[in-house]
Image (cartoon, rainbow, N blue to C red):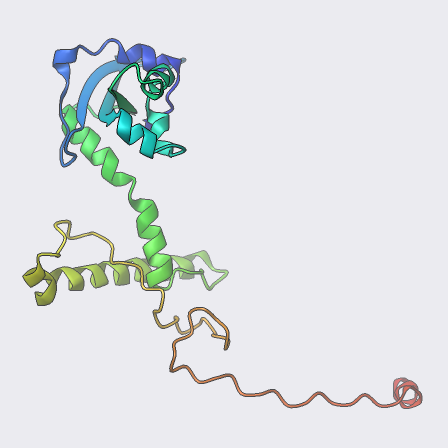
Length: 227
């Protein structure tokens, strides 16, 4: 799990020797280090605290003003960089784990890629039929969810295997990578489109005009009908 950057994490960071940092996997410039941490009330052996650090130059910090990435930098170091006292600082990410049989860089890489689930959900909503779950029955919705995710992966694999993508060198390396969002995709069968619906395709037949509303009978006639 990711751990908030609090005083306990900054203190634990100081226990990592400078010579203990190694290069992260598939993230140029980033490094990983490791120490241990025992949360309050934890009665088992100490957990592994994996730390990733990414360098930021003073120029990058100036461009990232207001960005959430600046929250990864220690507040004191961030202020020193903003004041021009230092040229570069590190941004840190803390990961707590009980996986003991894998090396540090592998765990950080694994945890980093797990965070892409939000992108998968977004792609399944905008490119497939997960904009809603159509049934009040949980098992029916499970089938719908499974079919939506299967469609997402099949679309991604078709893009990967496309000769045009392979020839242009744009085929992604990750075979389970989600396909790009398709805002103009044809709506799913149970999604009834309106003429002004954003997901309606250009060749969708317009909704026929409604017949004119019936005229109400005079008040006296309505009273007679009620009677």
